[in-house]
Image (cartoon, rainbow, N blue to C red):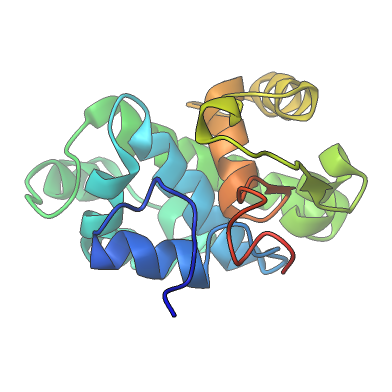
Length: 186
């Protein structure tokens, strides 16, 4: 019997794998949280599918999402990334990634971990939305509004409420699996 899942992965094998193995699973490891922060920023204006297919190249380009290494990227490294056809070559997003890595390290220093900081926006728990229809999946929430405002106050770039909400979905801070999806109760 075939598993019933959310509609958005369609028939795409990589999207299905991401849906089944990552999306909505609570993440508490700082490197993975940084990865989602970077990838969701690059997603702005694009589809998640585009970013997902380029993720291996992003991992290579951004030092396997080691925030300390990314924070030290200089102009020469940024120029080399602008020539990397494997990633999305958007100078604003690349520069924002370096800035965000530096700020990520500051947050880690202040809170002990980025995990401790970021999960405060959902009181340390997954917000369990009980959605029956894909059309009801929100693009933002009061929690993503608060997260966005705080990140932006700290200087983070590409940290609008919609990007923050996508991050929250990826990191399992919200459960937007449809109630009909076999993963909703996970």
